Image 1 (spheres, rainbow, N blue to C red):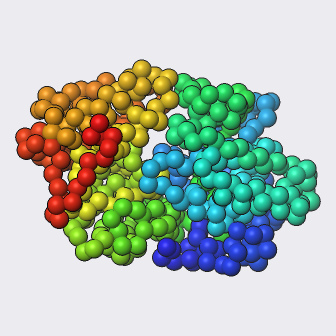
Image 2 (image 1 turned 180 degrees about the vertical axis):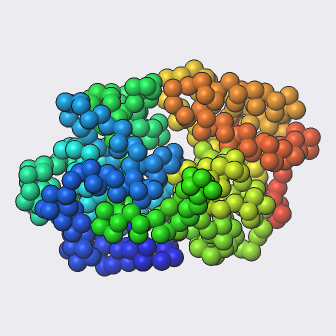
Image 3 (image 1 turned 90 degrees about the horizontal axis):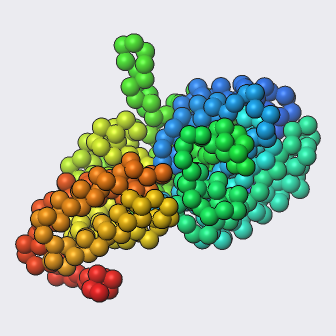
Length: 449
């Protein structure tokens, strides 16, 4: 579902056979890249345009994209690489999949422009292993781009060379973390690396590397073609009396709506609208007319918001931070009044326990420990001390591991318990899993065991 196809990323999705080269050329895709390369536009000029646009990473961290590109050392003689993170494994997130499926040529044009801007001649697209259909579409798009002369030794007939390679992952959530992705791309087990050194200086094959998300790079053709100001016209940007930004959430975002909504799917929104308006206007409200209970705003690793908070929070990076959560990867999950929050957290922790790579002891042991304690609590065998123990374990996990997977498990854990504590207490004071308003609730088999 797309609320408007006249924005930035989804403007071609409604076209017939939008994933094909013929449709892409008809829509004007690749024209911006062709003009930039054939005119000899200075690479630094493209980098500055991206900086001025205010584009921030759409993979979860929200780091300024132009600034990230600028971290590449200018005096390093090693090759430079652009790596696209298409390992979209965050529960609740499926917007990168939509780009690969509906408009892969927009991504490829973004890869060409970004590679030209940073001086890279090799680009790798690391695709989630389960995306076999999307990967097939992407590889066909790349083959067509080579045939057209858009890729290869002489891109668009110029002296610029660029090769794009697709690498399929093997279904590991941890490989969505940029250094684990690089390790996997090099043929090793997908373990995260200690930082520093950062990928900007010691990335793929220990060379200067930029790692960007699919949605991030797909924005680049619009920014270079239409200008930074056109991109910044979407979203919300405010400065204080000293001229310093207090709200810097420019552009649009692809949001993935799932859970208890009447119209789930991917929609492109201008940053700055209220969260409750997004649910009502883009998702047609909560399913079956039920009341809103909670919202996971940006993927399962984000702290949860209550219905009252959803009424107040705006869809900007700054507003999310004020309410103690994150925009994340744009995977919004709506939970209605009948949702059992203990079961929801238990289900979430099952995922993180399974996906921990095992490299760091606090994460390897802590995620499984949290999952088992919540399992006892779910069936009415927990105690007040278990709640305290969960929070204590979370404190001993967060910030004590190489990557942020431990925090991805502990941040929502803490927020669920703090905001819905009475529901957790009810599970060990009233004898286990309650039923919903219709008396229908089944404990998953994994819990019964």
